[in-house]
Image (cartoon, rainbow, N blue to C red; front, side):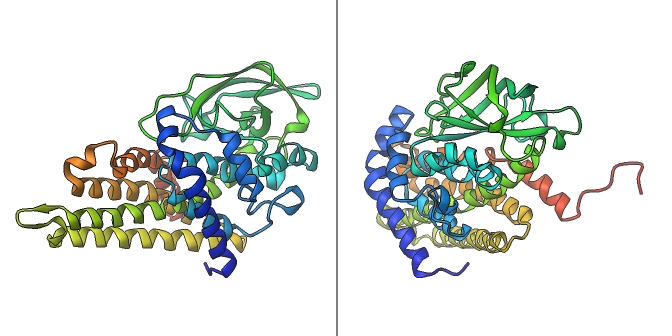
Length: 387
């Protein structure tokens, strides 16, 4: 991925915004378990940050996806992962299919104000019995004249308590699981929609997460994104952007964790020398920095291919798998070098340790990424009884 002056300046602008509008409030938001999404998103919308790669006619910048990766990487300068996750939900999880396949009227009603920061979006895929197994969702949207009548439940929904609308994956037909689903825009103030209580999570504390319940929710069919029963395909495409975003979003946070560990161990003495004087510590931190740079290379390569219109499921899945595992590795190794101080909540590495654990679960668990990779790389044996 070739960086231009425009890429660099965009990244700097986002980092300045994070330093002034997010980081001073992170501790407060973490304690509260929520951040003011409407207020923050409006500020970001005014600066164009919520529509970097979205169409100009709906308020976006109309730039290619490399600029979105620059934004994702810049979000790694935030002092927590929860707020960047919620922002990424708005830009790279809830809106890609709407921007690509939604009708003009639907995009003007929901995409344009989401880009402007006037509406907060959410993505509704996971359910209590269907996390990484998207085929297993049971939420239904039954046809009734010009409407759908929706019944079901979604779980672990980012932005759920503040969102104005959700991009909802529902079963709209009987048949093969990959041809019976649709994506529908559902305003969350519609009668029959109930927001559950905010979930008490291990990490990502500043990001509000809750279940959503749908009981005989009547939505006009004009809120269908694209074609009926193609929602599974659309959602798999959305996952490509989500997984590239995930691969980029903590690169700088991991680098900062490593450099902070270098600084701390260089000042901390034990047995007549600093902790950093131990060659093992030097080698381990250097190895981790190398791994971060290798992950960056995968993300950039996937982005280049994506911009060219090529299929990037394999590389995006590799990036998603690697970032989840590498975050755990970096956080655990750096925390160890802090000793007892690393176990205190006041030390930033402890927050990263908690926040980073989600990456191997959300957006497709590690095991799902491995299943995709073994299939795409031709490693899956044929079913028994077949040659």
